[in-house]
Every structure is written in structure tokens, then in C-alpha cells.
Length: 319
Image (cartoon, rainbow, N blue to C red; front, side, top):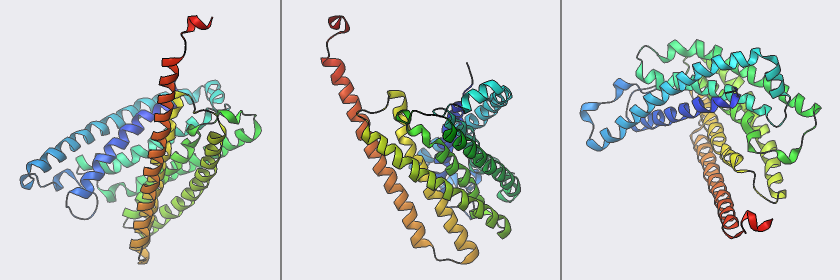
């Protein structure tokens, strides 16, 4: 099977599941400062309901973490081979309707960094936060530079090659998604690091990256909504799920800004509780609103497709 960067959506999804399970345990189980570990869970004191909730989540987190790391290794090998084939890479990058898929590996690698930080460290005692700060900062700086380099390259191709804008769809937001995940890694370092210099560097790079990502989100989303309003129909079925891409993007940017507020509170004693609460509520309100809107569109599309197939004459009668 020919390699496509969009293959990285598989480890990306697995990493997302692992982080969802971890975040539930992080906020549901009382523990000390920092990220929760497996040994922080008081198994002897848990009720049957708590045991029934926590144990499946831990199993899901373990499986999803292994899938994320395993697929990342496999696809990284394929990615290196694909990049070494200049013809395949150039053909992909010079197609304005496809080249946004190049951001899928960056988004996935950013997710893997967060998986190592949280779910993997949950199971491995030696993976302490202080031990991972410097390697995480180096990794963050690397993917931060790559995502900007790729963005400039994609924009240059867009400006120099003709494109049928009527074929644009919400997959065009993959770069915005990648910016969100990359800077989620940076804001995590800013919020947790005990070194002010490291935290400040991560925060500065993240704020700059989030600003660019937010500008791209507003610009692209406005244009895509305009195109959709102008269009007489919804996109083809394989593209329809891309409507939901706005949901994780909004959550990522809201969570990243919340972490920036934590950094400001830790090192500058800013009272950011009200603003941080507003950011989280606002991002999740947008998420819910967009989810309801998207479900309405999909339901309407399915219903119209059903009635069209049910009441239209058979193909042989139209000959």
C-alpha cells in the first residue's frame, strides 16, 4: 500500500484516547502535586463503583498508549522512506488540494510527546517530570520549527499554483490542528516546568505559535463556511467527517490558553482564575455548538440521500 502522511491519523487517534483516560484520572483521583501516577491510586480504599470506573480506564489507557507508540515507530519508518523518494514527496506537496496532509505526522508526533509525558509516565515510575523537561523542550523546539517551515512552504505553493477553490473542504484545517497540538506541548512545559527560564521560553514560543494558528483558524474557517453557504450541497461522504475537525481544534486552543494562564499565575502571581474559567467554558461552548451544527448537517445529508435513493427511479428505467 502506497504511503500517505494521513496514515498518522491512526496513532493520533490512539494517543487522544489515552490522554482522555489519563485526564479523567488526573481530575477524578485525589493525589499530590503534578501528574498522577499508577501508585497514587488508593486501590484498597476504592468503592466497587470507583474500581469499575478506574480499572477499565487504566486498561484502555495502556492499550492506547502501546498502539500510539507502536504505530508511530512503524509509520516513522515509512515516512523516512517516503521522504527519501523525492518524486512522491514533490508530487504530494505540489498538489494544493492534498498537501495539507503533510501536517498529520507533525500533529501525531506532538500527540505522542503528550502521551509520553502523561499516560506512559503514569505506568513507568522513572519517567519523572523533571527528567523529561529538557528533552521535551528540545523536541518542542524542533517540531515548532518544522511546523512553521511546512506552513511557509504550503503557503508558497498555494500562491504560485492554480487551484479550484470550489473543491476546498475542512481537511484544509489540518495545519491549524497541527499548530494546536504542537503548542499544547509547549504550554504543557510552560505550566509544569520548575525552571522559570525554560517555562518562559516555552510560553513565548507557544504564544507566538498559537497566535499564528488562531489567525489561520479564523481566516480559513470563515472562508470554508462562506464556500459551504455558497455551495448547493454538502461535500462528498468521505470528506464529511472533516467537519468535526473544528471540535478538537477549539479544545486544543482553549486548553493551551488555560495552561498559559497557569504559567502567568505561577511566575507572575496574576489572578487568572476568572479569565481561565471563561476560556475553558467559551472553548467548550463553541465545541458543543459546532458539534450540534455538524450533526444537524450530517443528519440532513443522510435523510436527503436516503429519500433520493428510495424514491428515485431505478437505473434501468432511466435508459
